[in-house]
Length: 574
DNA sequence: GCCGTTTTCGGCCCGACTGTTTTCAGTCG
Image 1: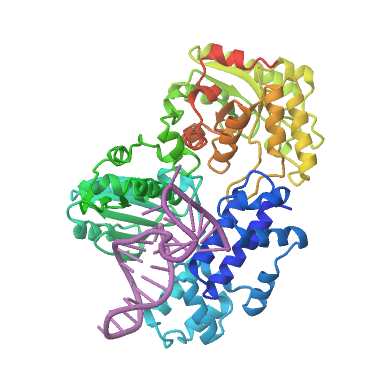
Image 2 (image 1 turned 120 degrees about the horizontal axis):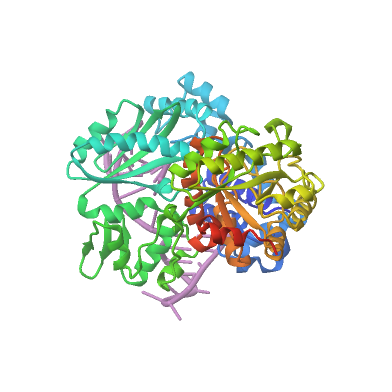
């Protein structure tokens, strides 16, 4: 039984209990238990007798989980579903609509789903309910409109584009002393719901006025002295932007507070509590002196708590507090450490630029080396190379090397791992390559055993150096394929295979969490590559570096930081 | 419902904003 399945039932339970008006802390307890199950590295069903050891799981939730494991469902949930319409929790996704509102709508107007809610609002039946009015009714209609039109989350690069546009306007406002991105986008999370800024100003009213006058604003969700919430449209992307307005002497505290994550902030507050203080977005309050200590810089805020500055990418409560306290924070990899891209496509397969253009662009970025790795013969949709074409390409690479002596070009391939785990080129050809990347591009739906065996078999080939985009996920579009990551990590260690972190913002594969695990538990090495299909693709390396940082990777963990000499050595497979 | 190096009971983050009110409930982050 999958953890996801169990977590899903716990989430449903929490949603329905919340609508029923159950104690919110109880609801939160179910949600916390659901998150613990979701994030568990081991199969919950296999540690059935030790559930209570997990944080957030006690007697009550453990009993529910055991019931799910033994009979496949939860009686309490089935009972709740009989009492409440099954589609009711969907309404929780509507912005501005919460459990209390949903409960009232159901009790008073027998509204059970999105369509009925829309109909009731259009017929103006909602405004006459106690506590409701015409504005609330209008908000409901707008929320439904948005919900059906606008995705809930966006890819990081899209959110960054929107943020840059807003940033350009903020830079022009003279009442703003400084500002910075905050929230999940500052932590470089792989997908983003909305964009947060913290702005330091002595004139919040004027700044708020200027912000809502930005031409790209499509909606003003809220506007006060400390906060402006807007919806902007940039290049067809419609996103919410929250801008917090604080006094310059509180900027550091506010930046920390609004950068999160929520879980990290909880840990920070706990630490402050131990020291006898209270943390808020305005500073650290000392109840003995009744003074609030203010911090213009984030580092000062951390220092007051006896901590070094923690990079935003680490602030997920994945051990950063413990390591910071012990003075053992990692020295995270930086873009400046990166010396060359090892996964690139050209006109030979499905790329749109020549080998020369790609090499030239790489050289202009200051790279010392690249690898040309076009697709192999059976990937017909991507124009995979026949063996003859491979030889042709090698000749051309030799030519380009003579034209561009300043950059090393490796002769490589991205060879398909066929459904049975064999490779799409014969060993005799792979043997001649400087670099062999193997990856899965077909039969994504094989069961876990088959898929795991397939990848393990590829790793056992003595000429395969790298497994590219190892879990095959497409963010917001396609789940990772079923694969036992512990088995492939273990085999990677045994065979000396390197895992790719594909920097394409639709992939970011391996994920931050898997990177951390592969490094800490298996001591693996990684390669960060853009998989660029055109010269513009090189710039996406920043998303790879950011994800690597979120995975706690340091310079020495990533072979793209090696000198060419070191790289050649690393590519000798034992 | 969960949790405890101040607690096995009494907390669980809490302040801002909106829309409905005429002092506050609901939502959000």
